[in-house]
Image (cartoon, rainbow, N blue to C red; front, side, top):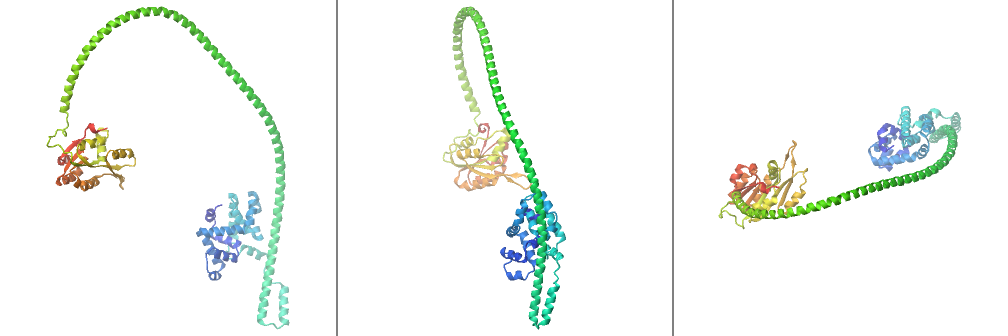
Length: 523
């Protein structure tokens, strides 16, 4: 039984009552001082036994260190009973300790009950709880020791008549001062109390001796029963030895049988192998005969084939000559077609040149123009996914929109989503010139989520504006219109790169140049 089980199953008042049985007032005093519950001896001396007992019980249930010390003291107090109970069977315990009254009369109740409560067997400490509860109902006055109650009921502490007569004669014959008489009265009462205590102790010892005699008788009967069981075990052991010998003989026969079976299986395997080889040889002989017959037929057919091949070779040479003439004609036709195709391609290339490339020489950007690129990855990702089910090639995008100009900075703004692993993607961007700005997706109280970089992008653009000549914004979000107007007010260029279907018309109108993303920038 664990300490927690003990504290949860024993009521406080029953535990305090058990302590009055096991500990004297002096022992309770020493425990209070040793455990540090009370440090002033004068306070303990002014307390009653019940008050000291209540303090000790409360400390046991509320302070783990005090609990350990009290449990250790209780175990030491009942060490002999714990050892005795540990060797007894459950049925023997329930028979020998059937009622609490004999244990209380013999003075063993406290130590035996504590030994039963500390036993690891469930039935044993359950019986201990039963004994304690039964005794508590009969003797639950916490101020008196139950052992003293029983002893008092058996031996009445009335003074003997001889002692009273002796005291009266002594008082009448001599004129003794009153103080000496009072002292003698006290000594006589102490002597009478000692006699009564010895009588009670003698009675308890007699009853304890009777119980021990009964226990010895029970142990003798148990010993006889064990002897009979030992005799039965010896007979069974002899039978077991005989059976073991028979088993060894049978095991030898089984081993011989297994060896014989293994030999038969090996012979059967070899027989099967020989049959298989015989069938293979017969098959090979049949195939050889068929091959001979086929060879003779083949030689006849070979001669016919040789004659046919000679005729075919002559026809093939004629065909080869005709094909060569045709190949020459096709080669000339291919050259003519190739020249026509090149002309068509040049025409188509001229027609399909993007509007962003059809600019005049005065509009071309200088190579010393300082450019900053700000990519809203979240906006670009969903725009490409919704319309094309593809992804943007950010490396090609950077090369195209910057061109020969001087790249001062390139920021990629990413929202981290727990379900999507973006480590490789981020490493790729960093390796190809991008500086990564990232934040985690924020969850609102209503279950929705928010993740955007609008304010962050605006702050970075404004802070970098003094070192840039042109700002390239990769986003179609119309919320950036005020930012674009601010950039133009600072006499800087604002260029927007986004999907045309996903870009705000106001943003396109404000931008100095709008680059629509087509399939050439998708992966």
